[in-house]
Image 1: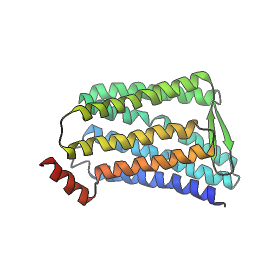
Image 2 (image 1 turned 135 degrees about the vertical axis):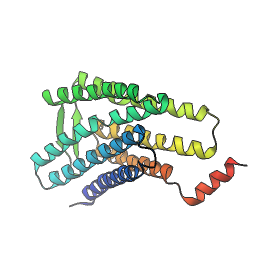
Image 3 (image 1 turned 120 degrees about the vertical axis):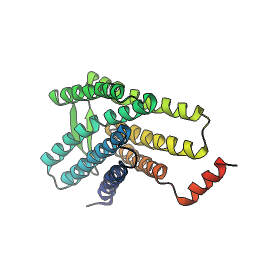
Image 4 (image 1 turned 90 degrees about the vertical axis):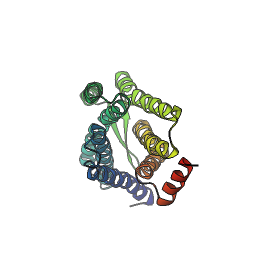
Amino acid sequence: MNSEIILNILICLAITVSSFTLAWVLGKNKLKQNNKPSLWSLISLWFLIGVTYLTISIGIFAEYLQHQYLNTAMLNLGSVSFAFVSVPLVFFITYVIIGDKNISSIISSVFAIFSILYLNYFHSINAGNLGATDHSSIISVSGDLTIYMYIIALFIIPTSMILGLLLLLLLQKLPRSTHYKKTLPLVGMSLVFDFMMLDVLTLTETMQLSARIFIVVGIVLTFLAYFPPDSYQKKIRVNDYS
């Protein structure tokens, strides 16, 4: 097994483990947060991301062992978890902005319907063309309708919502510690979500590997937002009162 394959698998496993760990830690804290719906949406988000990259890791290893069927099965399974990543993300952002569970559920349900329609169309016309390279496996998305649904419903709108929420938070006069806790998770989620999209859409190994590295960076930023170092916590608290 060459170093490029090992690096790709390790990065995907790093995304998997860190995503599952973040979901588990958030799950442990759910009672402290009074079981807020926004917390459950975050747990679902990171769990789906972990599942997506677990299947990719297995798929790359299967391709190396020349088990084409297992590789295809894993990538198709990963496409399902990936398609629904936008659902908890949209619920979280909507709930933070509006604060109404019912409205947030309705809006996120619309994205769930788009995800189902996309997957149905994706698999019915075999839009995912599986291609193997020396170091990874790539699914190329073909079909105008598929790409349109993919970009508009599952990417542009959620990304715009993240940027809009970030802008609202930055315009508010809040203590530095509050800005840190609220904005850094959004920056991390934005990096993860955007580069997951690039990971799937790209047709080159270099771009794919780079996208996955930035996904790891996004997860690290999210960890730092929820669990900042003690030294930095003291610093921002001092600045709040200076």
